[in-house]
Every structure is written in structure tokens, then in C-alpha cells.
Length: 187
Image 1 (cartoon, rainbow, N blue to C red):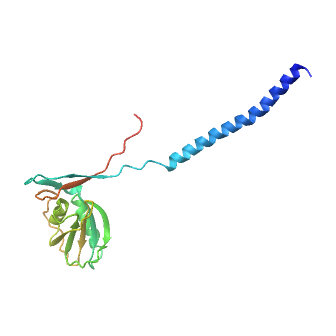
Image 2: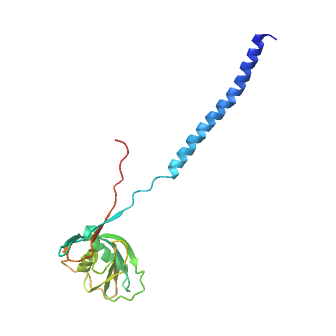
Image 3: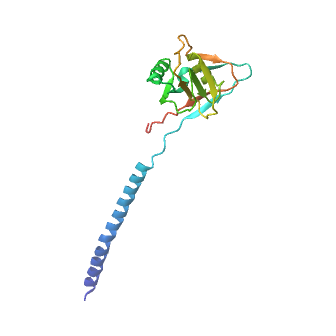
């Protein structure tokens, strides 16, 4: 056997090892890239959640509240079909945001109309109360600023010249839910 033959044998051996080794490295890179892609599709960062910003009034200071900042849930507790839908449409025309419309989830028997919010003197409850004739206001210690309007069978309708915004004199702070705007990627 010549030295040339032993070198040729070593080269062949390296080629035999190098081929499968290269294939394993490429398969590892491919599977890593596939895993990264799959993981980035499934684990998308959640959208920023809305935050509530409150402004506490100074003594004897009035606060301004407008219909655009109030979210309403309109419920029918009476026997008149479609009452909640019709009332929600009218309140939407006045600038309120309507979240839910349906039958009342409350067990209370309501004759005319009841307005429920985080506090009976909360600015948003006062503004909604101005829209409705014969309303009763209640606070239920909720943590958000939504307002529930529960309509009974003797509900008389909306007040014709009710304000869409007003200044209120209450110690309960005006709270606004701020929804963050997602940032665009790129430049």
C-alpha cells in the first residue's frame, strides 16, 4: 500500500462522514427555523389593554362629562318586546357607546327605569340619568365606568332636550377609559 492510497482512503472516509454530518446540521437549522416561526405565530404579544384614567376634583370644582366617554348596557326588564333595542338606538344617536343590549340580568322588579353604575353620584350615571325620565339611580361598586340602563314596562322614554355633555358637581371623579393605539412597525 502506498502513501497515496492511505491518503485517498482518509479522504473518502471524511467525505462519508462529512455528508451525513452536513445533512444533520442543515436539518437542525431547518427545524430551529420552523420552531421559531411556529412559536412566533402562536405566541403573539397581546394587544395593549384599555386603562382607566380618573381625575379627582378639587373642592367646589365642577367636572365635565360627555356622552362620547360613556359606555352603556341597555337591558329590558319589562314585557315590551324590543324596548331595549329601540332605546339603545336612540342613546347611540345621542353619542353614547352601546356595549350590550338584551334582557335584564338583574332579578329586581323595575317599573320605570333604573340607572346603575359604580356610584349613584358618578358623573357618567348623572349624565345618563339626565337622558331618562323617572329614573332611579343606584351604585353597585363596579370597578369600570360602564352604566347599566334597566327599562321597566312603565318606561316613559327619553327626555327630549337632554344634554350630550354637562358639568357635574360631585366628589366622585370623572374616569375615562383610554384604549392605547397600537404602534406601527417599520419606519
